[in-house]
Amino acid sequence: MSTTDVTAAAAADDPATGLRAIRALRELADRLEVLQVSSARDRGWSWQQIADALGVSRQAVHKKHARSRKDD
Image (cartoon, rainbow, N blue to C red; front, side, top):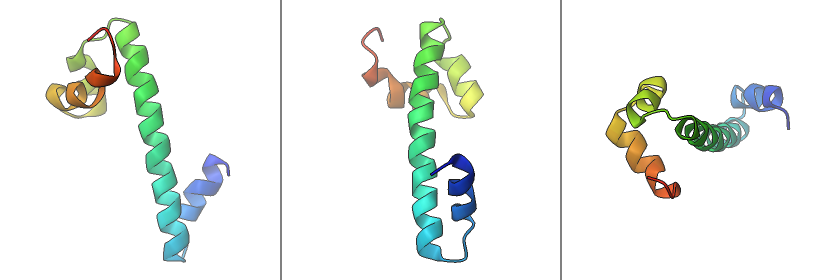
């Protein structure tokens, strides 16, 4: 299913379809966040810079992502 299809499904009249699509979008967003945080850290970004870009606290982003990185 394409991103356009998932987005359309999220706005569907059928709640079951819409809710499944929302779950798929959340899972996609989570995977993309992991990739981009890792990329930012590899490029030397601080946890504060990443937090600012995501609109969360430094502590929140560090707690969520630092465990998955071996160098932090």
